[in-house]
Structures are given as structure tokens and as C-alpha cells.
Length: 165
Image 1 (spheres, rainbow, N blue to C red):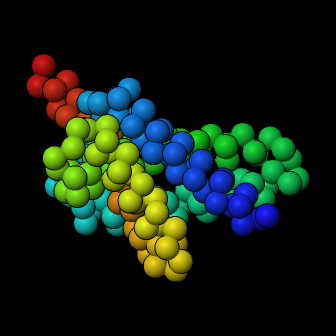
Image 2 (tube, helix red, strand yellow; image 1 turned 180 degrees about the vertical axis):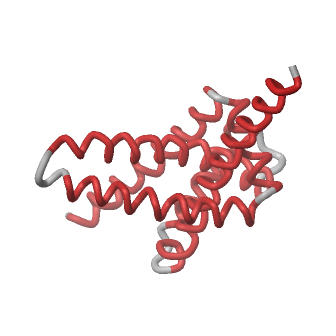
């Protein structure tokens, strides 16, 4: 009976995560397309920057969480940092799913393509050991790095425009 529950929860998680990635793309199409362009053009830099950011944010969240045992006030920055990380990760994963869908299913309409690409990505991430420890962390690092690069590229462009005026 436990196996049936795990299969049901996994299926529902697959459906909700694929739907959230499509939702993010539908709600913020310009931002996701910028992240997608960054991901396609700077994938090596995105990976390394995302890996460093993921490790640092994890260390800070665990640090604030362990400080929260003594004083619950430290839970707030931990939740805020982790929330910002997850929001950025959703933007990056939405861009990654678009790229994957365009490569695997070029003939389908965008929503079906994203559903299938999201399902393929999530199911391959569930593959024992290779998916858990190689593929999923690689895509997380790639996605977070692309979001960070996109955020700071936009900031540099705005600063250049202000200096020219």
C-alpha cells in the first residue's frame, strides 16, 4: 500500500511541477526568454556560477536554520533566501524546459511541448543515482546560473544607459 501512495504523490508532483513551469513561462514570457537566451549562449558560465551560488545559498540557509534553533528570529532570513532561490530556480527551469522541448519536440505546439519536455526532464531526474546526483544538480546549477547572469546583465545595461544620458 505504501508503494501506491509513493506513485500517486510522484505523479501529482510531476503534474504540478510541469504546470508551474508553464505558468511561469505564461506569466513572465519576456523574463523567461531572456533567461533562455542566456542559457543557450553562456551554458558553461551559467553552470559554474549556478553551482557556486547554489552551494553558498545552501550553506547560508543551513547556517541560519541552525541558528534558528536558539532564536527563531533566524528562520526568517533562511526562508527568505530559500524562497528567492526557488523563485529564481523556477524561472531557470522554465527556460531550460523550453530549450529541451524545442530540441526534442519541435513539431508540437508550445504547451504540449513544454508538458512533454517537463515530464521527460522530471522522469529522468528520478533515475536512481545518475538522475539524483548528476542530472538534477547539473540542471539546477545551470538554471540558477542563467538567472543570476540575466539579472546582472540587465543591471549593467541600465547603468550604462544612465551614464550615457
